[in-house]
Amino acid sequence: FVEHQESTNDIAYVSLLFDAHELVPMDLRAYLPIFGSLIGNVDTKEYTYQELAVESELCCGGMGFNTIVANWLGGKERADEMHLNLFGDNDSNYYRQGVMLNVHCLEKNLDRTLDLVTSTVCGSLFGNNIHHLEALLGTTANSAINSVSSDALSYGRKWGLAPFGEEHALQELLSGLTQVELTLKIAELATQDRLKELVPTLQALAKTIFRPENMRVCVVAGGNRTYIQNSFEGFASRFADMVGEKTNDPLPSLPFNPAGDLFERKFDTTYIPIDIPVHSCHLALETGVTYDHPDSAAMTVLSQMLSSLFLHREIREKGGAYGASAGHLQSGILQMSSYYDPNTLETLKAYGNGVDWLCRGEFSSRDVDEAIISVFGSVDAPKSPSSKGTSEFLHGLLPEDRQRYRDRFFELNRDILVEAANKRLSKYNNLGDEAWIDFNGESNNGSVCVIGSRESCPDKNKLGNWTVKKTL
Image 1 (cartoon, one colour):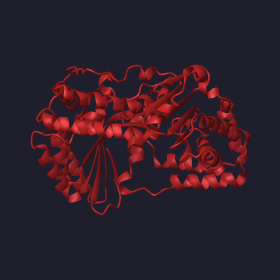
Image 2: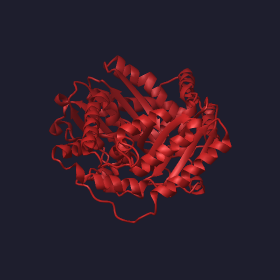
Image 3: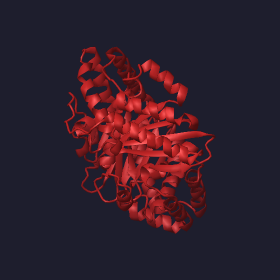
Image 4: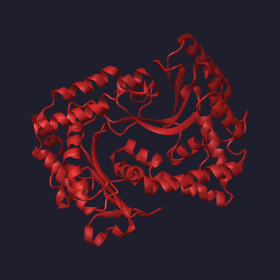
């Protein structure tokens, strides 16, 4: 239970996180986003879906369910103190996976809202109205397929990052192209009158995930602390009564297992043809510099300069793309992306040349100062009351962790940045010579993904080690 007292104008912001990683087998984990999209939109034991929508609007601002994969940055020891289950494929990159409910309401309506939450998560009846279920899944499928062309940049990034470990593979499974493909397959069941096959598994998922011992709570409120604490004690008691005893019955299987060999993917170069005339080009390179690493601030500033001083000039101004950017992820990956880009090979060569540019130190001390100021715009950005506590609740970051990270920026200068660039990126020198097509996971841990025009789909015989992903 994480509590933050803030001035919120008498509004309480509540987040409930239900851990799901160990409880849901891999073949069913991809169904969690579909499961989350249905919770709160189907009949319950106490309300029809229309009545639930009206009651939700009357007592709160609506309930939002989503499936999350959150990287844990607070260390294993802190997680053990909080009795949290962490997962990951190495000692530096841990993550949590679960189903999260976000709701906000006036503090005077907190008891009523929590009763509605209990009714929703403990009493959803997925098979009560099959025609409504069919309509919901159809809407979800249409939205998913339309988002591929409008948000090609995001989908390309997720596919490109998937080989870098469990956390990123899960992100692709739950919110990438793999999830879009599953959503379309599930919607097809409606045309075959087979939706009833889905219902037992959805009901079993609800009983398995929504357990009091599996729940973590974050509350941001500014009102009477005793009143809020009593409200949640009553909520916990009612919640435990409604869910009943835990069972160890296996979850029913479903016809599709979209995970396939996703978690075994090697570093590669992938082209994904879709029906748009332009491209989004993505390159990801492993640096090994995570959030708590001494070089984390240096890599952040280097990526900022790469984005504003090199990629903008080479890809937007010269290449004609709508935009290009670079960023360094907290899991230790440098990524570069372009969007609405008329080019492919030229852009990928520019990425490689950008790495060389950093290692040669072709930037000034003034450039460094301007990049640090730009980075502080996000590091010190004000937070809304609803987002307070998120860093601690999801990622395990305390204020002193964030301050320690912030302090590292004041130690930077041009010489330190050039040294960090060569230490972390020199093994990727000469990527601009088309060596980027040879990623194979043996030496250079990098990945390329281009998503775009079908007419630009590469000829494997001419361009080497490309993998062309089957289109949607």
